[in-house]
View 1 (tube, rainbow, N blue to C red):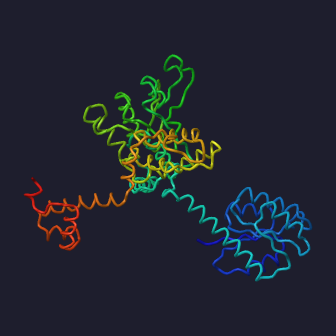
View 2 (view 1 turned 45 degrees about the vertical axis):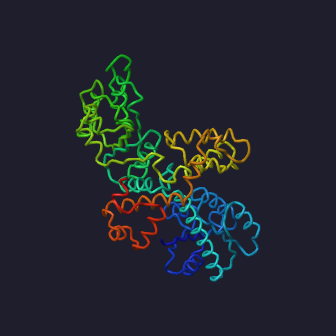
View 3 (view 1 turned 60 degrees about the vertical axis):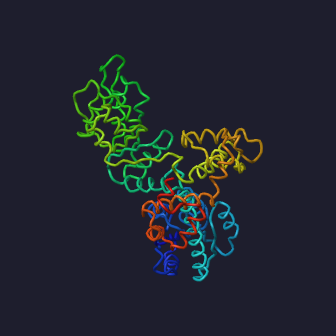
Length: 457
């Protein structure tokens, strides 16, 4: 990425000298007053700015330079500002550093020193940018609100990143509490519609007789109490994204009207005969098995194919390898900060309990338990009891013992290879990628029978 330097200097001669100090791999722009400098900051977002404090209309003082410094730090706080002062003007240099400038440089111009100071600021800006990038990706995903390290969830997140730029209707399925709405919001945030509305409606939470008017809106006088025209959620989302949560619970009569909207992209308000064109991206979610609903006649098959141009299946927390403890640690940190208990950490029994528990309520349940544990913890260590998790100690020890896990997997692989090869040891050893003597040693170690007759006894 090309680095950008902005030189703010009202002296054309000095401006030119400073500009030619830098090599072609650094893009250099110039400005000679406060107004042009701010325009350049907005347009270029420079990594580093050299700022002469003596700018018009106060070239002999520093008031305009200080005012511009405040504007820059407010507008672009990541930009490194190097103030340029006179040789005897140390007081203003110190004041500028106190205001937030990263460094200062004193006239007259010395090319070597100027290059050194600017390169040091560029390096600092680059390090801070890399650090922000690492922090954003520390949980394996840059999707806001999603903490994931498991291959199962990272696959979902990568799919979200690929699907988001395309205006394609998406169906998100998964158990309650797995974060379906967060993923729907991510589809919106990563799309070209990000600066437009995101309107969400829960189809299961609104009574059937109100859901139609909530979705499609109504005209004044359409029914008792309709004293004025009202836009529905679909119109509210115009230009942006409409999220239909729990679409599997949508009444059959309303499914037909939703299908027509998806086909025509027009809205018929309740009580109106005039269609209103709407441009929205539709994302749906449900915890129910939609294909089963189609088979039972509770969900229209043609609507199912309309809303599932792309289907994302969100795994339950128990099926996300290693994510439980990663998410719990993240929640303890964020919730602890909110509740002014930032020094908390999990005790060993809590770590084991979190890993062993099946989390039937998924992340939503974990949020509640971690929040309770922060309140209940006596010292700086959150215990399994604080989390209200009571698991068998011997089970958790076995779960976390890598040697035992490896032995179980190894034994299962050997048995499967023997069965697949009809107990031909040469064939089985090739399937397993080991020599025949090694296979014999392993079957002896695990006391695995090497003939079909013996194993069937």
